[in-house]
Image 1 (cartoon, rainbow, N blue to C red):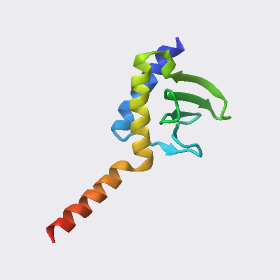
Image 2: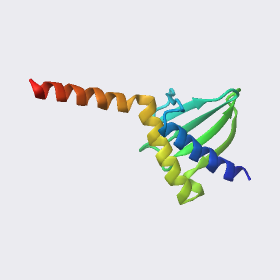
Image 3: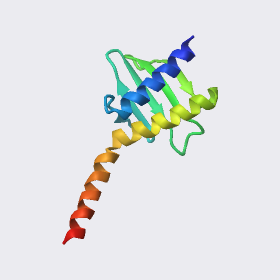
Image 4: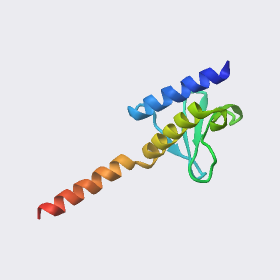
Length: 111
């Protein structure tokens, strides 16, 4: 079934995003991030404007092939929320920003 493979894809994406192996980028749409593979791209949508996050799989012509939504149950909502937050942080450079601010604050405190 496609649903089981989508759950596996979402889990592996989360794992590989957390380790820094998957690069996510902003799209033209707010609260939407994309990562690409040879012939396919994956888009994670979330944020406060959406009832539940969505993971969508597109082909190279940008046709929607498959999607996993939080409407499929609690496990998908949880993993998609985690994936969205992790992808958002990576795409926006949150860790770098936090590190730079901490460094600036630590340096100014020592003076």
